[in-house]
Each structure stands twice: as C-alpha cells, then as structure tokens.
Length: 209
Image 1 (spheres, one colour):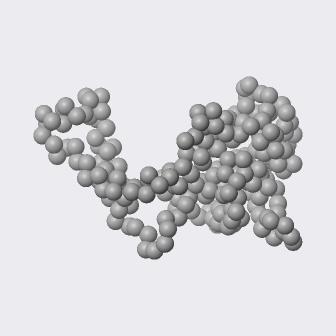
Image 2 (tube, helix red, strand yellow):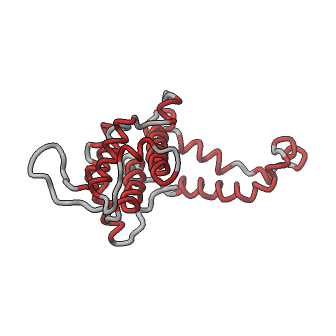
Image 3 (cartoon, rainbow, N blue to C red):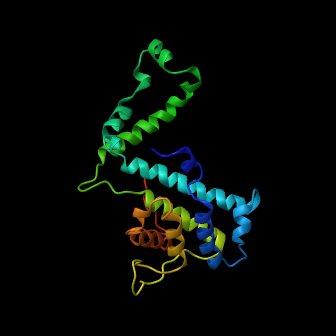
C-alpha cells in the first residue's frame, strides 16, 4: 500500500535536485536549480509541481498495471458494459441514481461503449502491454522540450556500462524514473526509442486512455 506522503511528494529534494540538474545542463536559458527547489510561486514552482504530479500519476498507473487484484479487469469491464441504467423501470432508476447524476447517463453510454470495445478486441497472444512508462516518457519529453528549448532526442549507444543510450534526454528520464521505480529503468531505452521515433514522425503512440 502506498503511503499518503509518498503520493503527495514522490520526489525528495535530492531527487528533484538531480532531475533539475539534467534540465539545467540541457537548457538554452538560465535555469537556477536551487531557486527552483525553493520557489513557492511562478514558473519554477510550477515546474516542481509538474514533476511531482507526473510521478504521482506514474505510481498510480503502475499500481494498476501490476497489482494482482486487477487481473480480473475484463470481468469488471463486462459488468460496466452491461450496466444499462436506462433499461431499468423509472421507479427503480430513481432510487439508484441521484437526481444530480441523471444528466450524466448520456456520458455513461460512451463509457459502456468503450468497455465493450476493449472486451471485443483482446490481445491476440502474450501479456497485455504495459503503458505506464510510455506515458511517463511522453510527458517528460513535453516537459523537457518546454523547459530546455531543445528537442528530446537519443544519442547513440554507450560504448560500455549498463546504459544502452547516452544523451541529455536519456539521463533526464533515468533521473526521473529511478527514484519512483528503479526496476523499470531496465529496458527503458526501448521505450525512449519508440516515443522519440513517434514524435519525430508525428505519429500517435495509440496509448489507451
């Protein structure tokens, strides 16, 4: 179970200092690391908040992907797809649905439709692909380009050592990922490759919502 403190601020001050240092080295403008860490308002504070929020979203998404209790998600989707509230007698429907939510039934039709679509197109073989890292790298690329003024890119292969890629953006991704999910750093270079190639070609990664 994740603690409230970890969800509120996944990155420690030291984590943020290392992440921001990668941004500082890459930035075309003057990024003051300590000023950003100590800021209470303005752009630097927004940057820190954005990093913490990305980490929270990743942790929650990763939990959803890995917890055994979610392995029966297809059964849950079947219940959602079958939940036709509008087919109920009006007297029963009025007892189930608060008046304030009646107008939301139209939106729930789309939810049911989406659930049915997922059930109707299961993966042909193998495990369901994990998307949490793709979301994180995509969002980090947006943030990196916005803050540094440089394009997120990969730079060749490292001649030795444990990293498959070198370069500013790769180092930035590792600095952001390792504190919240060190095991996920293994193979992240494949994710970075996919994300960067898709961005360069202006292609959609087709990540599920």
